[in-house]
Image 1: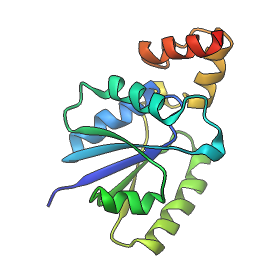
Image 2 (image 1 turned 135 degrees about the horizontal axis):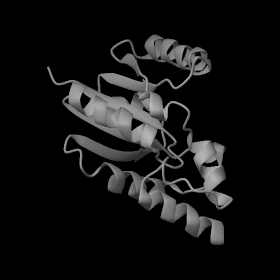
Image 3 (image 1 turned 30 degrees about the vertical axis):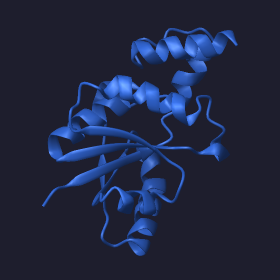
Length: 160
């Protein structure tokens, strides 16, 4: 049986914490889909195409990882991709309640999908896309939180 894990999120932008989680997942599963939600309701700084491009460049070194965008119900996207695992990251204890609720809802709708939680390495546990985005837009140094391609992209957004 091939285990195909789908790691969904907005990833606005991708950070070293996300990359750490995907790298470790790529060693556990046959195939990992880094699934970027369009999430217009969240009004992301980077559009879907930009986020896909940043992720593809940041994850190119992982041969069994696919980057894909989606704008439908996660369960439907997982079924389209024939994924059997939904992978979620937990950084802090406060993430758990929301993630547990999502996992329970997904299980009720799609019992064939299993949700697994991974935590990032300690050195990335405090990093969030929101903080990276805010610091980067205000001209702060985010080079220890995100890949150079993301640093450059945020610098360009800050100029406009």
